[in-house]
Image (cartoon, rainbow, N blue to C red; front, side, top):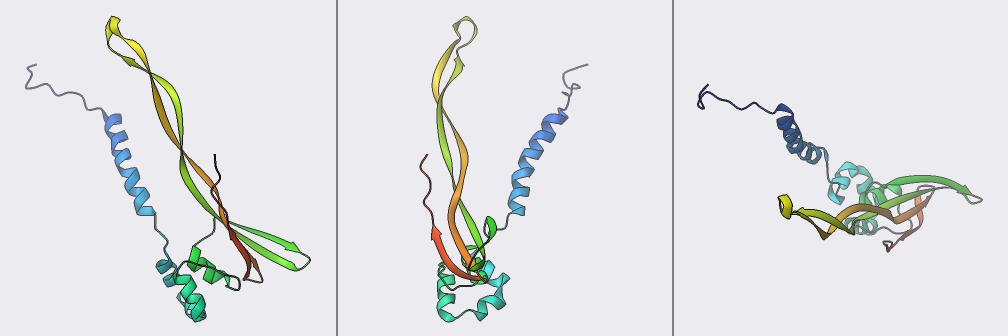
Length: 158
């Protein structure tokens, strides 16, 4: 066999793995739909039209206040991460929890091989990894479908 006739074997698992690595981010981005105030206003157009003018101005600015209904809060802040149900002597209430997050850097010492053959040695270096951290950033308490109180919470310090 001459060198002109030789064809190296095709590494199918290598090709499949790299094709998947290229397709996964595209599928992820295609499946993600960013929710904005404008898209939520279109989604709940009738509810937005029924809001008083002062509440529509707050919703347009991404603000909420006591007295707003669940539709106004949804349009303004979006879908909550969690919805909790509860009750007191005053009646039933619902709490919407919103999440915030950040990527936390972790630093640690690691080793890598430097050099080759009998001149190889281990070199210490400072490595970094990043881990997602989530926390409750806001809570909104509703009674009878109307905001009774709300608060935002600071990002925890780690």
